[in-house]
Image (cartoon, rainbow, N blue to C red; front, side, top):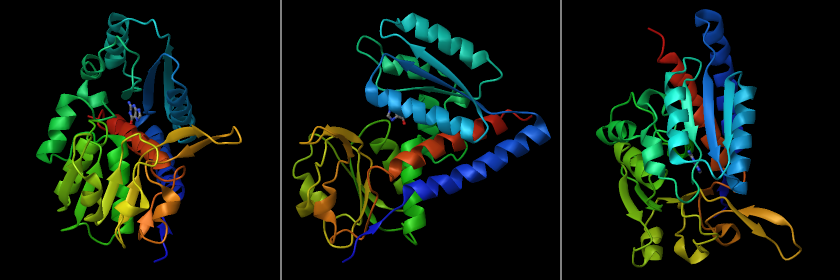
Length: 289
Ligand code: GUN
């Protein structure tokens, strides 16, 4: 079987073109420019790259970007004070706190301080609850939303398919499960304590991997015809001392077995950012009386 690559880059590019038009329309008709505030604490190199990309794309679609780069020594109270200010600021429609936060900060307390109507990452208890209840008016976390959009484009129907998700994080695995359940999939979540995850993976019509473990999923885990969404972005150093991005799936090993796969880079990553802009546009539109 020839494995087809899922082109996230071009999907995201189509999405951002549409968003840019809608931003222009919102400015012309309602005099509103969507504004996104991003808080990055410390200097985790991977987070710096993500945040730089988010800022670049925010500007490209004509939105305003408010960057808050804070030193690693920033206290919990200082961050909570900043969020309280951003919650009240009418120029800001979306607030994102880049994760992970440095040790000593309580990520949950910080995330829950974001007012739900500016929570474009969809991580507050309010938006998490909306998703679990199937309400359509909350914000859905950007990475699982992007994965769902790619799956809907690539597969004619998701109903009745067995989706196996490896990784049970609040950012990805758990909301992904909720979304696929609502699409009529049979959902299995495997995690660090799961026995024999490879056996579950072989039963999957759709396999979604978000673990942060480079090439965890081997060729032997994959049955013929599976569609694979690889959410991992792992930076490694090659033998000739170059840095390279690889996924959570041993890409070369699954070629010829999987029906479709998202490459790393160029798969899920660009779609995640496009979904953040989609949510920010929605947050700005929600302010229209
Ligand atoms: N770190 C890695 N992915 C994400 C994301 O989608 N949102 C936030 N806030 N932090 C992240």
